[in-house]
Image 1: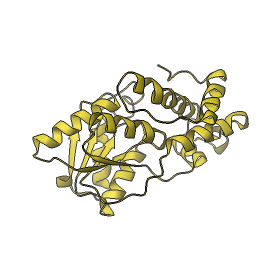
Image 2: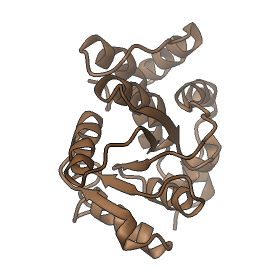
Image 3: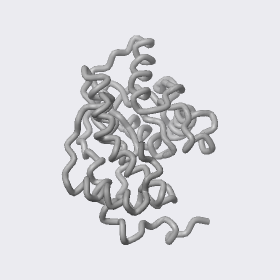
Image 4: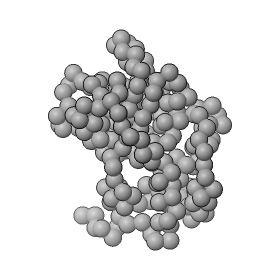
Length: 221
């Protein structure tokens, strides 16, 4: 059994990790949208959040998007979107309210392939809610704004504090490496034309470099 001590962040990096965590959470005030889009990952909490928002009336239609990645194949052998759908059904979301996009392997494909699935069903939304891991919000927003500029987009995640999220995942190193990787991608992907530019305060740059220097580099591109 995982103990509490194994899922705590080291005190030497906690402040830097909190800085990145706060940067990526956009704190959007949610309003009703036409569609919810659950972005596939290793974190089943995305599906939980999507189900909660659907049941609260935030959107009438939910798309789960995602194939597999090396970080998810063992946990979700049938694909991220398929497992997300099954979880949402278990939480009370009706089958007719869920579409599955099972091919996307990155955030850009999550957006473009979901758009294609919706268009194939005759749905052309004017507004969408992107549901993701907390530290993926900023990158998902920037990607959607670039690839689907005609929709209004808001972002959502389970409202967990950093320490609670780390405990829920059970692997601090994974969380920190993913945070560092997503921070780097904000500028790299904007430079490559994959996403719109986003501001990055100096304190975020400094926290990012501290964590890179500490060895959290496995998710860097």
